[in-house]
Image 1 (cartoon, rainbow, N blue to C red):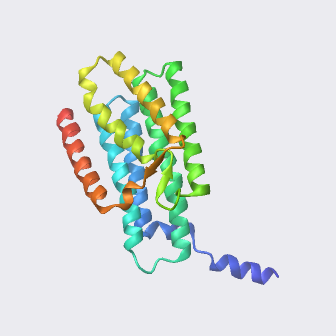
Image 2 (tube, rainbow, N blue to C red):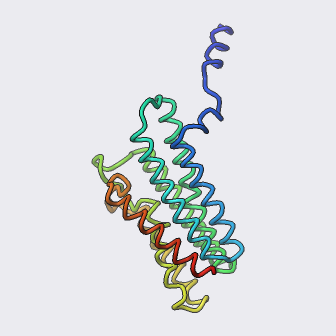
Image 3 (tube, rainbow, N blue to C red):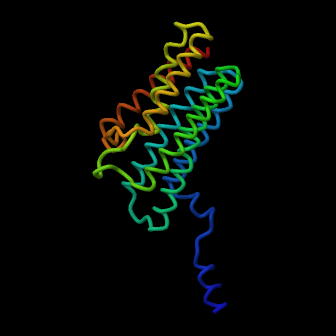
Length: 217
């Protein structure tokens, strides 16, 4: 019995063996972009934070596209990739926007409440999806979490039109609205499954990167 157990353990792949899987590399690259986004949010360089946030979405969409086109991936590779992608999503689309809100609100207690709501609803939304999947096989129940970052990056394009205090209110209301939509019963399409949407995201990513990069100069 002991020998069989040891044999089973020896047959299991190592944790780091999955790090060489190309879709997982893409997922981790997105996580690196999110870490940069969080860092720049904390120190108040919001243009750089937006660049990191939108590139995290691009890599997240990219890992799925690569995984669908790759041949020879094992069932373990696919299962591990799904779990990794899900865990990274809560950081990309839950923690990063919450920290952005906290930082822009000067870490005032009121913004702590908003940040918690955004993070909590992201966790609930992701857990619901992991349990029930797509509605009818084609649509999400609730607004998909990647939409949070796409919309917040767009909203920040208009930051210069407001004072910092007024824009913090805009950001707060936007964050709570997105949180409500994330856990609502509305049906939204799976955007990253359409090649046209992927091209549109690529253009949007490059355009916003150029815009925020120009503002940083």
